[in-house]
Image (cartoon, rainbow, N blue to C red; front, side):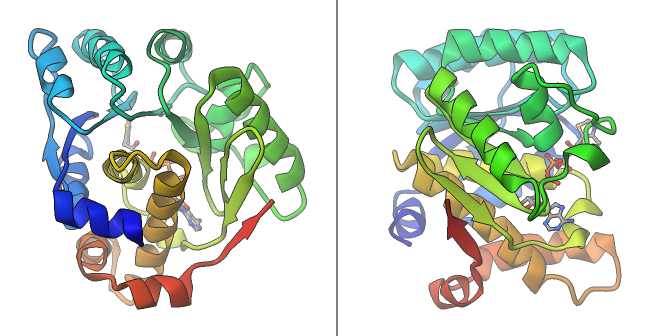
Length: 265
Ligand SMILES: Nc1ncnc2c1ncn2[C@@H]1O[C@H](COP(=O)(O)OP(=O)(O)OP(=O)(O)O)[C@@H](O)[C@H]1O
Ligand SMILES: Cc1ncsc1CCO
């Protein structure tokens, strides 16, 4: 809650380099939690913009030559200036280009958080995965039965990269090399609008700007799940999207405490 309050109070500038599919929703999510978004991607200006920001979020969805160049420039700037950064591995399980690029980004920019669905996390670890495009494949879904082996995959990747690893889905896992949080908040409607993962990446960037990398990531993921649950009464996915942003804007600490479902492993 301290992280949530500090973001509201300090209104940190959050630099996002993301895909055009959900860019508007990402900017509104950053605003909903009290931070200020800047969605800049020209290679000749991004170093300057990242250096003035309090966190960076990059996203591989709908990758272009320009964004590939800009993300590397921004990622290196963030690393050199100790600005917290998160990468969303959208599509690395279905595209060799993205997979190789993500590996290069991780080794050169050292992101503080690496996020993806379980198919994408497996792909970056060199483990066989079965994604369905940008979505998790049936065989890779985290369940009550297989979460222990998945936690080990995340912890190992964290040890190798120094990053906090977040695997999102029905059960979310957030791990560093010693601890893992399992979050079971959320609802199916979150997968019925495009870009919830991208919005979540922007939220993670907003909260890690506080300097609390593991806590900020857990908070962002729990909030997305809880706000999804609170938005379910709508007629369809159009209003769900609006309701989700409204709930993110207005959720109280008491509701978070009442609704959060997590386990520490
Ligand atoms: N069926 C579900 N049940 C519960 N929570 C879900 C479900 N699907 C998605 N979520 C939640 O939605 C958020 C986004 O997760 P998801 O794994 O769908 O991201 P993604 O695949 O990267 O999304 P996108 O590609 O649409 O941006 C997470 O907070 C996750 O917990
Ligand atoms: C639909 C879609 N395609 C590439 S990125 C994206 C948005 C969700 O990641």
